[in-house]
Length: 301
Image (cartoon, rainbow, N blue to C red; front, side, top):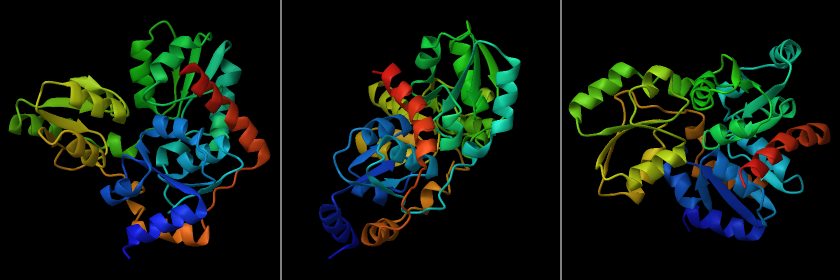
């Protein structure tokens, strides 16, 4: 029996479901029941019938799944898999901005801790941030924690006044304009597709800006056959699976989230066998962080 067979047997025994982000390794995507970006997986997590959720992603994703499914067991294959950007804002900063601005909405990117979600008015993802901010009645927007996504959203919603936090995704931040231009010279007919977590100078030279799912859909609909992808390299697997007739290139220094790559088949099997690395959220924190998550889901119906 292969390790994949063992995982499938245990899934049946434990009434479990496996969720995986596009950034995890291909072999993990192959065993997942649901694969997607943060927005898709948050919607899926809110309506699952299985009693156990194995979340192949980083810590904030597991927290969100637990908040939306308090009665279920949520297991993380690697408890140390985290998101650096999620910790780039704190309560003191948030309180300072709330004291300074009236008519303020704290808009929390889903890539954040449950404690920051609990202090926010609404959560967003890269896929729905523009529409949600447009729908908010408040004039002032404190967007946490990512400055790059915040600036991208602000350009689409000029009627709002944005207050910026200085957080960022280390993976997207390191993507280099010079390396993109080098790839352009090598593949002159390729379109540049970028995630809005990238710095502004990269977005300015991009042909399309969107969430991971948005990038995948755009590549499929486009008549173009070649693309330079400016996001984490785990998305290559889905792109090549769905569109084998097209070519996808990354910068010479490929963007890699090391935390996402810590998840292995052995670790998935281990947590199914043992129930280790269960996500726990206090009642108070769950209640506080549930409201902005549910508001996000309501505003995107």
